[in-house]
Length: 364
Image 1: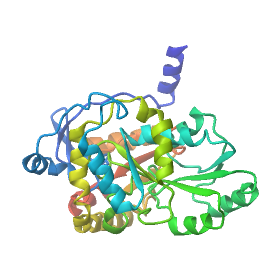
Image 2 (image 1 turned 90 degrees about the vertical axis):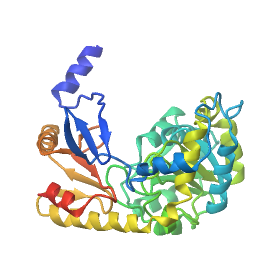
Image 3 (image 1 turned 180 degrees about the horizontal axis):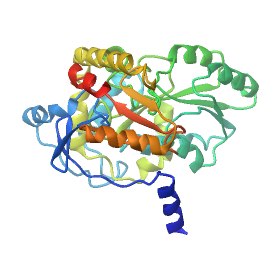
Image 4 (image 1 turned 180 degrees about the vertical axis):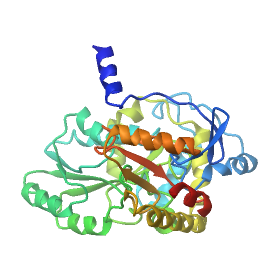
């Protein structure tokens, strides 16, 4: 049975393997050859600041020893949460990863009686898994189709005590940006509707000071993950006091996981305090994005208005063909297939420190 599943995946060119590479700045060393890494989420190249961090910061523990509710909380956890709460005017609660956060927080919200979730069809797998874990009551609307969402709200608003709208700010596979102003306007038409926005791929890149699209907006649950533009690990939930208290008591990945190590929290804190200084990097990223779209639009169907791009192809085999062709020309970007995306594609991401020459050579 197991072997037949694996054999079928291989036949459909959809078989996954783990890969280990040595990193050299923006490049991967594979079989002693350098390949420009176009699959990294380190959009602002902040990982390059590690030496400065260790030079200018005191020692932090590598281990947190236990869950936060036992003895795993270090003062740096609270200091960072207090800092984020001050900036975002919401209460902050740290988690080990964005996946753990969405899985447990959405599952916890689904336990509220008489609740409904309305979900953009292209939300991240972690959000879907959170819904499935507790058999949540949910409906999906077409990707970014706010007219369909509005219809669902009018049909269901009087039937439920809680309606949670789930969306991403920048969609991880499509690379397109949520029209958050229109979504907030729609939400305000209903008293029992809450917005849950995952800023995984927008934090650091979009919004005032790079603080994301939800910054100081009427968003009830704002999720910031630190493994993308923040070049770190972990995530934070930003919400009202009462929901923070609720998650502390019901979010299972918080309760039952060893808390994220203090040194990682300190590293994220160090970078977050500098986000407002990176406008030049954000501008570079925007210019590179425009350059890529201009160079490739006549050759491929390309999605993505900013740092995430998707080249849509016709089959898994075609996606593998182009991935291998690019690999031979010193570019690394793996093919993306079902169930991650419905259409076989090449997903590549830009970094603010890429040169125009590197991007032009790739596009050719």
